[in-house]
Image 1 (cartoon, rainbow, N blue to C red):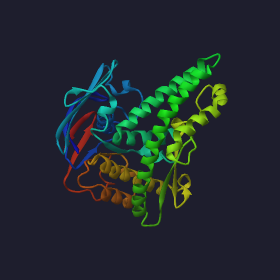
Image 2 (spheres, rainbow, N blue to C red):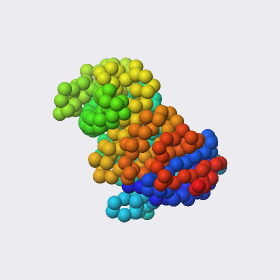
Image 3 (tube, helix red, strand yellow):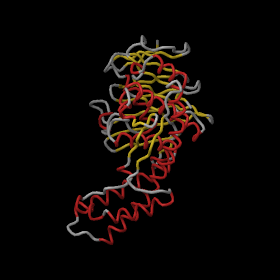
Image 4 (cartoon, helix red, strand yellow):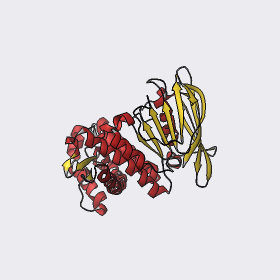
Length: 363
């Protein structure tokens, strides 16, 4: 798949913009604070209906305006698909082929993206919430039912935590009903994640082995706060562990275990990657991104769109080469950079754009 053109109205520092792209490589050059990342963010937003940089939708709407509009024409194997998002203080409206979508899970997954940004280099050493977000974004694109199960789980979790905070005297029967619902949806979320990480780890290890010149093996462990030996036991174990921890939850007024507490751990040659060198961490993240591309292709049948936001300067020549080699010819790629000087071995058939103060010109 590839995005043929995009039209932005009142998105960040873009008042009105329409741009056509190459189906292969698109490079955006400009100084900092001119709108390069905003442009990539808009493509990401069109795919996932949210920003990777902020939780506040208001920040995406151009200053002084009441709503934004993003339109993209996506080329897929079976034809062109117009995608649209309108965002205002009343919420967001999503459309596929000009038809309004009632559920988020019906929209997400139509256009898949893989983003590699400087903040991804914090994935290993950053907070567990970063790693959960990483899973949610990737898994949500390739398995829409995951988004539905996660949404239901979060809804029940919010209910349970709210009840624990407000109740002067806890009704055990009511809490048991919430526990059953939480264990039901939560066990589904854990199973989805467990299978996804198993597949991702296999693919990422192949890339890491190549990037490290056959010197390093990469493995990933999914750390579930719900203890289980077999996937078929997750729901039963979740429920019994909720009951066992009930007095703790009542005292703390929150839910102490479940997918919202889960984490990932990365290992290079059996050693915790958190203690690895900067070069090893860069190779690890690069391997993950290349693995995401392959995994999305294997599940959906189509390659995702790759967004590289100012990361080429973070990679040495060896890792740049491995990244560009790993990008298949039919993966549409967008690169933002402040200069072309540090980019190595770029193909000749690329489309080059300059961004200056919210204006995009093709070179």
